[in-house]
Image 1 (tube, rainbow, N blue to C red):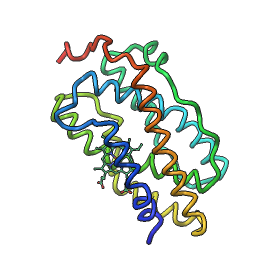
Image 2: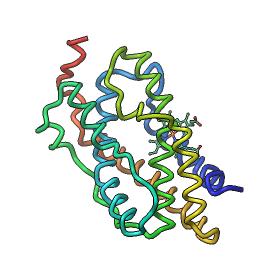
Image 3: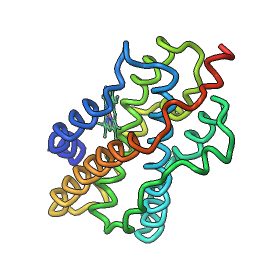
Length: 199
Ligand code: HEM
């Protein structure tokens, strides 16, 4: 079994639990929910991406993380959020700079999420019309990028470390789920939605 296949199999339940928790499905997507999802993702991604970037450098990993944080900020700005409001959103605590197996496992979650992002983009467009979707739509061919990630990961990670990578991927999913529960409590979903009025 390839490393990617192993990661997929080992994290299937965690992905499903996160998806169920998010409950961001056709028929439930409103402008307010979309904004709350973007803001929760920003609070999670920003510190995570900083830690991952530091770890990529520390391990001289031949991988460039495409930052989602800038796109999340751009989408929220396009939805009428001020820089001050975005800055005041809660952020999760930054994880430690992970060792190589944990770096690979965590990158798997971040890179793999782009595959699901394509589906979410379609749903958002279907339900909300011309909404800003630069984060979920990402750039280029997500599947090709993901395959490239798999080849790189397989080349750098000794086979004996695959279990540690899977554990880290599961921890990342679990941390995301915890973060969603926290940010659901602190995000103000009743704040005015400026862009709905502009549609
Ligand atoms: C409403 C929320 C979500 C939906 C509907 C969703 C849906 C999907 C779908 C349809 C795929 C497979 C795409 C394909 O093979 O072309 C996928 C893959 C994936 N998603 Fe999600 N996803 C969601 C949220 C997330 C989140 C929040 C994360 C992580 C932070 C995530 C991580 C992943 C990963 C790692 C894969 C790759 C699985 C593999 O190894 O093939 N997903 N998702």
